[in-house]
Image (spheres, rainbow, N blue to C red):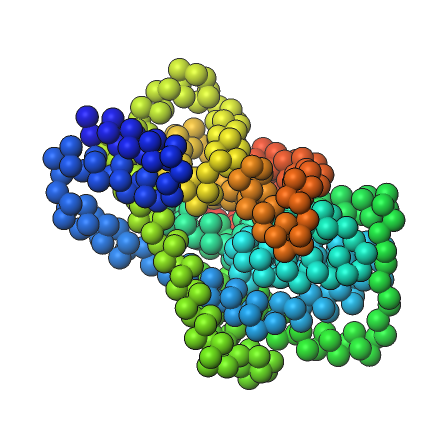
Amino acid sequence: MGLVLFLLMFGVMFTFGYPIVFAMITGGFFYIIFSHLTLSSLIDMLVIHFSSQTVLIAVPLFIFTANVMNDCEITKKLFDFIEEALGPVKGGLGYANIAASVIFAGMSGSEIADVSGIGNIEIKAMMDNGYDGAFSCAVTSASATIGPIIPPSIPMVIYAMLTGTSLGYLFLAGFLPGLLLAIAEMMVTYILSKKRNYPAGQRTAFPKLFRDFIRSFPALLTPVILLYGIYGGIFTATEAAAVAAAYAIIISFFIYRTLGLKKLYKILIRTTENVGFISSIVAAAYVVTYVVAREHLPAMLTKVFISSGLLSSKWTLLLGANLLYFVLGMFIDVSIIQLVVIPLLFPLIVKVGVDPVHFGVVTTVNLMMALDTPPYGQTGFITSAISGTPVKDVFKEMLKYWIPVEVLTLIVITYWPNFTLFLPRLFGYKG
């Protein structure tokens, strides 16, 4: 009875357009009441669960770091240098856009932070230099996908929390897929730039280029410090988030002099708002996870998958998981997909022998693709608002990157696990 009411209330509220967080909490409330559980017992479980998840501390710290980088013009300095270095090439600003996202990926861990922060700078620069709005938005959205794949990565932090998988090895496993995605995006950008005769910028004199490199060097050091610290054994991935946040404050305040107490206060307020939203989703999703576990839904799902033949091999199961992520990604927020679907799929993945680190990267790529997928693709709406380009034109242009780049990259990552796991194994991973 409790499960039926949970599904009914969840479905009704979702259908009538209520925020999905409220739908999960309302469904969970009815489940608790009609399953004869006490609310205090659920609260106790939530407190115990989250107090043991120290890895979640990394989430607000990475969000804070991204906000500091964007608000204190550090990302602008990075993009200006990359623009000068690549601008003289035909379509150079498209390459600069992608390269900047690769570097920013080593600082923020969030696609939305990339597309709404440095993406704002990139789109304006491209449109001012003669690139059409739809193309500028498409490149920005596609390149922002790289953000949470190359470490650090907020979705990987959540995945590690849900599954107990090593966050350090997850970060390592994201490197090569992220670089592959960047190379593929540059190839498409090259083809479109040649076909449409996009402009080349002016060549920058070497002395000025060198000065701008020196000016951006402290910011460029951020991902180096983070990754050397993690894989050099100096600090954990969670501690790395704190180091990144402290370093962002130091260079903004003392080197670039773009951060004051008033601005820091505003950044802290916005970070708190962002974290509060994410925390509410995580807490609500844990209620759903509790219902899923208590009702033995993974075991039931296993039987369904066995009867359908999807558990006949790990390759068919991975295909099924990719299709599930794709369908859900068109209509549901990616954080909800991650927090609700992974607890269901992970036992099946382990059962058929799929490596959990490999599946973590496959999941992350799927979730980032969902942010580019209409009708719910958030990056399309954000870039449309930034540029003033109709959103239908943005999504149409994004298809040129979505099908030949993101889908093909996902296929490679899914069915060539040795590629994804090469770096983790190089650093001692036994999976």
